[in-house]
Length: 113
Image (cartoon, rainbow, N blue to C red; front, side, top):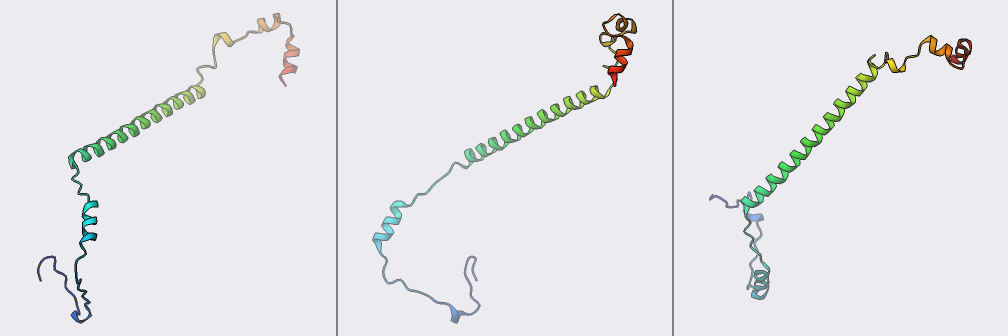
């Protein structure tokens, strides 16, 4: 058998049909509408590669943005958990300041609960 030749297991089961006459008007109409496209494969490949590269860049940019947001969130959570803001001089009040205020110590203790 030659390359591309079709072989059958049982030649008795093969059905052949003979076309009596070619109908030129149908063939001509088909030939008029036939379009042979010769694409610029290099340009198409470059366009696809550029689109894929842009998509990878966008994904990388999004990933970096998410990582930066996560880092900032972790820093914020670490600051909240740390004792840095606990002993700030501006927020402190002394007993003398409380005593000189309008409420007495007894009233402040009662308001506490």
